[in-house]
Length: 83
Image (cartoon, rainbow, N blue to C red; front, side, top):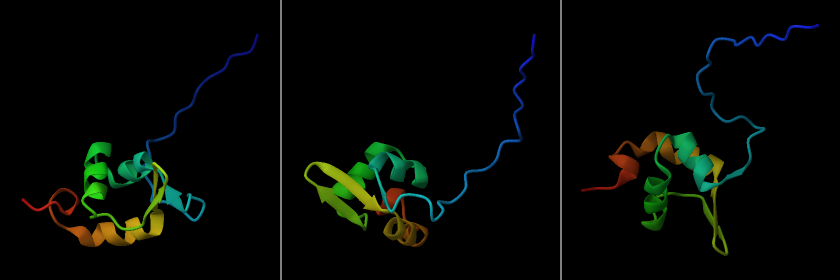
């Protein structure tokens, strides 16, 4: 009889996307990357505040490099939405 044990390593912080990451992200992937709610990201896209948006019919994809270049410089309230 064999014993199986699960070994958990220490929790690692989220790592930035690597070259192996997809070039285009779904809205869900982009929201997770930015750590914002999916609905918040959809609203920012609707307002034209997010760069690198590709619309393929009803499908949205976001260019990863454009998103990462835009996000650090955004610096305003939630996704740049001004009161």
